[in-house]
Amino acid sequence: MPKSPKYVFILGSVISGLGKGIVTSALGKLLQVREQNLVLAKIDPYLNIDAGTMNPIEHGEVFVTDDGGELDVDFGHYERFLGIPMTKRQNITTGQIYYSVIQKERKGEFLGKTVQVVPHITNEIILRLKELEATFSPDVMLIEVGGTIGDIESQPFMEAIRQMKRDLPRENILTILLTYVPFPPHISEHKTKPTQHSVSTLRSLGLSPDVIVCRSEISVDKKTRDKIAFFCDVPDYAVYDLPDLNSVFEVPRFLSDQSLDDFVANRLNLDLPPPHWEEIEDLVSKINATHKKLTIGIPGKYTDLIDSYISVNEALQHAALQYGWEVELKHLATEEFEEDENSVRVLDEVDGILVPGGFGDRGTEGKILAIKYARENGIPLLGICLGFQLAIVEFARHVLNLENANSTEMNENTPHPVIWLQEEQKHISDKGGTMRLGSYPIELIEDTLIHQLYSTSSINERHRHRYEMNSSYFDKFKNSSLKLTGFYNKLVESMEIEGHPYFVGTQFHPEFKSTPWNPSPPYTGLIKAAIKQNEKNREEKYV
Image (cartoon, rainbow, N blue to C red; front, top):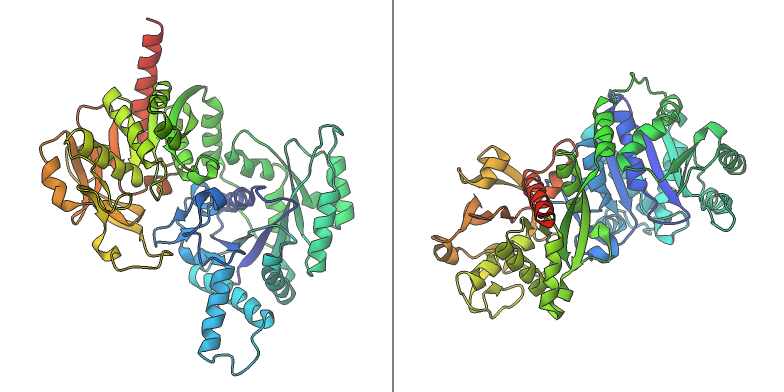
């Protein structure tokens, strides 16, 4: 009979955006370096079935998994820290839970009973977690609960956790509370009252934290942590400090130095071998040793929230780190380029350009202006998804002279639809979960730059799109400098421009598989070209 896994729930209090995803990932790393088999899950209290229909400005980027899941941004943190591919079943939302229960009610599975939050909704939540347990057979399950203690949306999940805590042996379940401890400048001391109120609210829901992790801009001293322990009824050795650090990858070792991993091991009766820190210590050393900066421009429309492009941002940093550089990101609102075309000259100040994905026509003409400027001025450029499509549009307009060429996403009546809706998408009306999603095989053409970057002819990368290059225009590009370099059947997956320092586009999203230990090849290519551009710019500056 397989042994039961240990359940660890990570909750947040006082304010949102504290970094529960980072703490969950860091705790996972603490256990991973001590040879524990993990499965991570995240509970999101929103009524959406998944994150796929959410505006990135509102919720951050949508992270895509190999199996086509459109998941919460925190799943990117999990994969980048742990190198474990996530699946869509690991993201549990209120929408999924209610949808499933209502379907069962319609089928008569409740035998005429009145369907209620308790027990039917809470039972469904517990069932989802048990299904993950059965599928993965982990040593430890780490479950992050989205939102903040006291949110009305989270109450059914809190009740489900309470029931599990009642039914499981004490050594099989642990609750960690991440809390914000403010440090008002005019007082110059940390204040514990918000944390006390949050724990009081949590107790009213039938739960108490076993561990409290204190987030603050500066370190929370022992006197303050002892005060939190006293008023929140946890041992003083179970209250941990987590100030702002130079890198999120310092968090696992920072918490380990306070013996969080030992506490968790003792509390959950885990027999852990000594940790293997070499990999993460080497990474942190590389991060702290970087002093040279590249500037990468990101022309996009979701510039109000940097988390909109977090996997792109991280993939750039991973690639730069391999060469001992760090990246300064310059997010550029492309609508400003449309208002004043001369403003695109701001790209003279960057070493490379990353044109990210997106949807809709807002800001796309500004992206096309940025792409044109990069092509004509030899600035290294990588276009991802929509960025790839708009690079095709720009070349068609200004090199092949196909007047008003466009994507039918932007203009259904364009005379030259070089980008159009995939055939299988034409009769789909639902928006959620209906794009071309997940990992697909791609064949790369030999003797091309992208083949050189990947060092293989066959790759698998993740996708999230509805539109593709129109195959009836292939001949128009055939004898041009723009080469189609990767295919899935007749679907174009990548392109590049010959004679340019670096001009590459991918229909797929290589950033989703990038980690600090295994950076994405197209991003590595961009960074390598950007370093040359940086050196060239400095030489010209001092001539």
